[in-house]
Amino acid sequence: MGFIRAAATAVSGSLAGQWLDYIVSGRMDNNILMTRGVRVVKTKNGNEYTPIHTITNGSKIMIAPNQLMILCDGGQIVDYCASEGYYEVYLSTAPSMFNGELSSAVRETFHRIRYGGQPSASQEVYFINLQEIKNLKFGTRNPLQYFDNFYHAELFVRCHGTYSIKITDPLKFFEEVVPRNASYVSTQVLSDQYLEEFLMALQSAVSIMSQDGVRISNLGARSMDIISYLDRQLDTIWKEQRGIELISVGIGNISYDEESRQLINIRSRNAMLNPDPNFHSDLPQRGNSVQLQKSWACQCGSENYGNFCAVCGRAKPDASQCWVCGCGLTNTGNFCTKCGKRRFS
Image 1 (tube, rainbow, N blue to C red):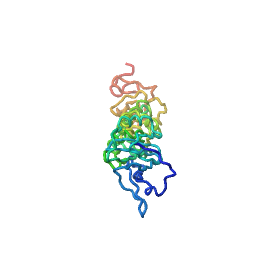
Image 2 (cartoon, rainbow, N blue to C red):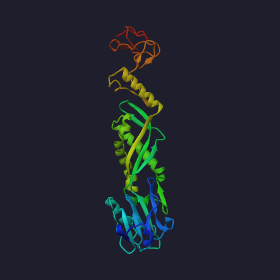
Image 3 (tube, rainbow, N blue to C red):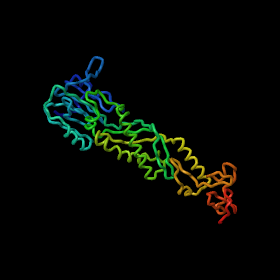
Image 4 (tube, rainbow, N blue to C red):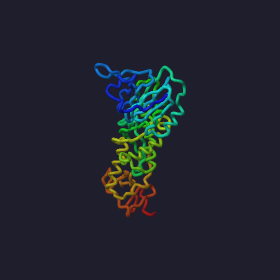
């Protein structure tokens, strides 16, 4: 059971009247991943499209660009074609397997899953969309954890955007993803489990980028790196098991949770007060946040991080004149204002 190319010159507006069956794909747009073939019936009101369940010998099939046509017999794949054009079905010929621009892995998939029986009374045609499927939306329900070496802090971000995929092994996709007896499969099938898998891979990719030292503010501009990281995470469950590959990712916006935003604002404010880029390099961790500048104790007893006391307004003592008492208080005079010990005693 296979296909033979039909001459393009034999194709005209009266195909439905010339041939036993003239079969084309059903509706296929950017949201349709798979659809059944339909028979073109010529009527006085124009062409009508009806479902088809049995393909007669000599039927003609039109394959549009970026489509793969699958011929099934009794629910099993018996032949396929990924080259655009017109083809005649001959139930007595061997599979022709017009591979088009698909990789050789598709032929290997076919030899693994093909059906080798005699033609039955039920043959069906399916069409797989080989175009890039774009504008698949994603958004993180919970903040993603990200340790930023620049801020020396564990930050939490939310992001949303779009991604696109492409079916690169359509036979594997048909076997593993398409429900049996389905008339069509839309991108809605990707909105549940596949989206969860994408978000899990995104979390892993973000963690790896954090380990590689990428600043959190640069995530939006590193879409190609994110794709590379995501490919490693999704290669097994998407490409090897389902014949789908991730093509592109566009991050529309990155937002921080309230605590992360406060930490970034403190870091930015302190950076303006202290232009030394290394002033926070040895800061100790404190839970999920950090002390973004070494603290100093004012004479009034309060602990401060800026250049002025938040309680009494005193200026931060000159480091060259400061000494730290055994009780932990920083002083500038000869006696500790907390315990009364003498300087250098």
